[in-house]
Each structure stands twice: as structure tokens, then as C-alpha cells.
View 1 (tube, rainbow, N blue to C red):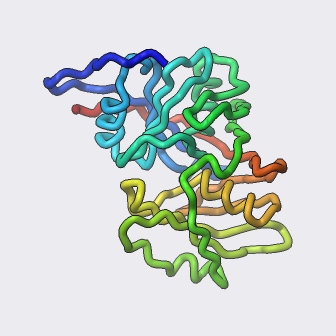
View 2 (cartoon, helix red, strand yellow):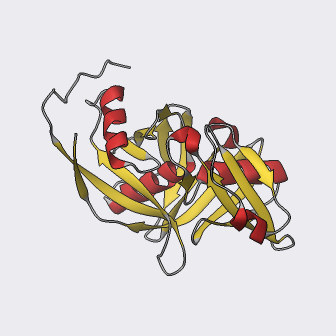
View 3 (cartoon, rainbow, N blue to C red):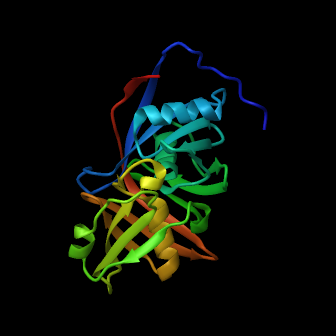
Length: 236
């Protein structure tokens, strides 16, 4: 890959960021906010990290080439090779912006993707993401009562709402990624589906809904509804 030139200088600049809400419910509520910047191939990794820290979102995706679906993903703490909610959000945003979406190119590899006006789906190996500690609880109430405190956590607390129906209550504690708790976490949902080897509907956070279906050989399909958010400007 060609080296990226430094674009931001020592002066403060305003950066425009689009947002989407990923994994909203049927009413378009809740979901995890994703920051999106397009045409970012000239930004260095250090500049992307600086911008991601300025947003304070759990993840920000940088679409280097909308035509090919080449993206980079950053948390406030670091760059990551793959994650669920940024890829679902990026696939939907590209489709919404008029681009044909069949795959995304991430540092981890090529992600199969599809999108429509309501949401998007991606397929990738669950283990491409940062490892998750899966913490089963006896009841959804126990998940709700779980403490989010603690340093360097990357834990997914979960319990069955209805085991026969494959419905799960979950929360993600993510201090290792620079946030305390994540509203909706696609990669953790993929790890859980891969571990249980069954389709799941996961209700996470305040009301977000994620769907995951194992495809075999460790690959999991992750789907959710997406809603366009507001644009914002940050100064860095």
C-alpha cells in the first residue's frame, strides 16, 4: 500500500463527520452511533486516530475508496482490523450514497456485504475481531444488574430471554477500547453466535437489536437496521 501523506497540520481544523445509528429497533430508535468520513485515503493512520478520539464514538469508520468499499476502523484507543457495527454501518451508508455494495475491504480481509433502504448485512469470520470474553448469566435481570466498572475489559454479558426462540439479552463492557459500555456490538454478537452455533436475536443496551446467523467454518452473518443520523463538525 502506498504511504499516506500527512494532511492535518499543527493548526486546529474543523472536520465534518456523518453519522448513522446501527442496529436500531423497529421504530428506528436506539442503535449504536457510528461516525463516518468518506474519501479519506490521504489521511494517515495517526490522523484517523486523532479524529476518532475527537468524536468519542465507540468506533469511527474511514471510507478510503467508496467505489471499492475500502475502509479503516478506529476506536478512541486504536485502529482495529475488523468490527461489526462499523461494517454494517459502512455498507448501509455506501448504498444510501448511491454506491453498489457487495463487499468491503478491511485490514482483516474482504467482508461480504449487502444493504437496502432499511439496513445491511455482512458476513465474516467472527474471530477476525478483537477477542471477547463471553460471560453467561442466569437471567436477563442479572445482565441488567452487572457492573460496567473495571479496567481493560472486553466482556460480553448475556442471558437467555427465550432459549427456544434464540432470543438473548446482552451488554458489552469495553473499557479496553476506550469506552465504558457499548450500546450495540456486532463483533461480540458474532462471537456469541459462533460459540453457541445457532442463530440469535440479541437485544443489547437500551434497546438495540442485532441478528446473527452462523454460516459454517467460523463465518457469521450479522444484520441490523440502520438509520441516518446527523452530521457534526469537530475541531482537532
